[in-house]
Length: 269
Length: 332
Figure 1 (cartoon, rainbow over the protein chains, first blue to last red):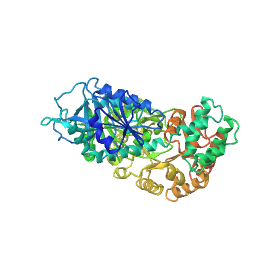
Figure 2: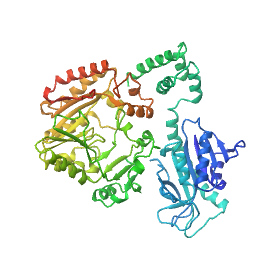
Figure 3: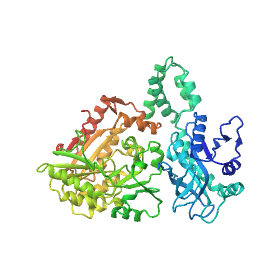
Figure 4: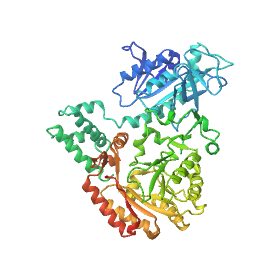
């Protein structure tokens, strides 16, 4: 699952169009667009809005085994060229001084840059730092749900000391759209990383089916989860695994059967 | 390989930091205030980070040298350990470091002089006693040697302190800088080995066994003291034949009479480390084996462990003199 968090519709539009995301009509706290294994939420401007939207959508996808995140938006800079694109590698909240370190992967196609998240718009640009209004809120919230490796913030320079895009929405969309292939590459790398973590988790419906087979205490559930996570990642299909415990009459018998299978499977390392 | 550099702003002008930045000039450099900002946060995934680690260049400001845990040592009067690095360039699935730190980044402390001062101070407090300083507890002592210059600083330092002994623990083949120096009898380089099968399954990125045996032989030939560490011995269906094969491979190249010390211990992790590591790698057979919890330590059931250790000891004693053997005592 990949979730895009954008402050403005015009920032999200290139992503919505590229991935053909469909507007979800049953959600009204934030505008939400959905697609296959992907969603895009429009948070509104500011770090609080970004944090709130991220938390809200994370709750909506609580069953997802793992979530990757991209905050996509515009930023100001002292001397970077208009339309330059960066993956943030350091985000500082101007109000609190709190710093976050998103970790664009080794195969990142985008150069890294530091960013200062401000509470109010400012053109008092510092060298070597982008200015935005969402990244720290986004990081603060999403790091509650995912690790820094699965959390990225991509910024496109819309304003600098010479040029201002201001509120020209079509222009903002165009600046972002220019890089949509790079953004897609970055998203695919992140999705691959996320998939590695997601496949280690027991699918929700499988877990429900498993725990419905008998009454498990919490300790037994913990053991069951460990055993199942191991065995489902071996060369055994879910059907085969259920077949191995089909005749077990109790939670204890199920765990014992899975333990014996696990011990046998692991002897060869 | 590392993909980026984090550096503490205050240490940026340190000559060792400057050298590192020169060497890593192609990588993006991100300035930080304190290494804890990057190394300690909870929202990190060790498994994902291990695929793409960064190097953090920092200074250690306290606790440079610490007393070694009870039972740790090779018979010296006093035992201490120190870590100029936290984390390792290799990715051994049994390693406790995976459960120890939130981060897989390689944290390198460049203020060697502060470590050195502490080593001298501790040694002077125990005049007339043999004081051991162990390196390689939280990292591989030599694996990053071309970058860290660790031995260039610490070996002459130990040589200058009469009652100080140093153990370097490694799985690497990075012995070139040691070969350029005059051997110091109070410096022991201990090479860790697992059998070929365990090596292929569990020691990701670790140089081939033959290359490490060769590095060991070159050090011995040059007059350096060398040790062997079979720790952890990992259970698998063919561990007995594999262990015998490993011993044959080693002792066909290495004269056992010349070894400083040999130790042996089976796979074990503290309960907390085991819990964390097995969550990170749920598909790993090593953690799915029949294991027991004894006194806060997760390890093989006592009977299996005894059988493994007895077998390996018996085989080992066919090659080495008894006095060079130091079993890993961890049952308390």
